[in-house]
Image (cartoon, rainbow, N blue to C red; front, side, top):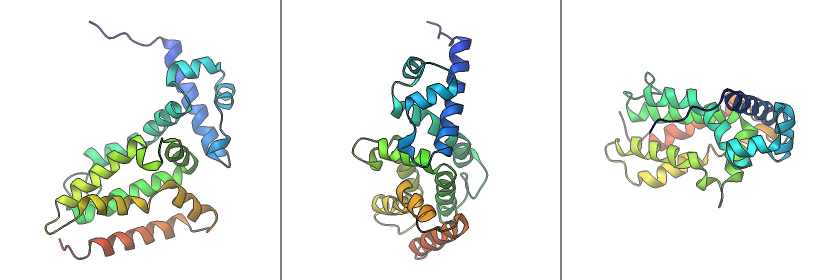
Length: 195
């Protein structure tokens, strides 16, 4: 059975919706302020078009997040060290966490919407398991490492979207400061496991 290609107008509409949603999530003061009606109006399509393509608001947020994360995930899965495979885990783990932090800094409202929209909290967000599994796998490669499951959760906790938003917004911590502090924290966690 051959796979049906999407119609050209459906592909065009999907691109327009993702572009409109991307702009709105970037420009609004709160992720909760972006409605499906706002996205439809900005994209020049009907709300039914969005629901057909993405199912619901959460589906749209997941799809937009995947598009925005694609470059980062490509670098992590196939890029050169220290971010990509081939680097020792003690170098790769800080690079991966830095990439995740940068993504959340660059996409604060989208990351918040993704984590807030997950049933039962941010730990049920689709991409959380992906990040956790990747970190746990790298941690398990470190000789003498114990509790890799918990350590992966602990390291991810410092990149939660609500924390990043709080630090960047209310606390006015600069992106450079956050990245430095994350690198220092990660180094302290991993320092007992030399290369």
